[in-house]
Length: 80
Image (cartoon, rainbow, N blue to C red; front, side, top):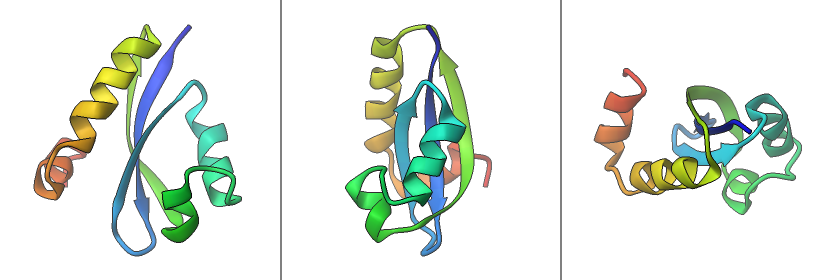
């Protein structure tokens, strides 16, 4: 089963990182306020990064790594 690490850009220009099996479905959940607590306060605007993994464990490791990057490093990762 495939897992994906994704980064969302929010309306107030922050970045949120998460994992999902279906990124589009998860994005809709964030938009509807059913996602993470963070995205209820910081409304998502668009998906800016997606990377595929073959295991949940690998995706979780990547999510952890990304969440510990500086904003500048995250912007470099997403190509901005």
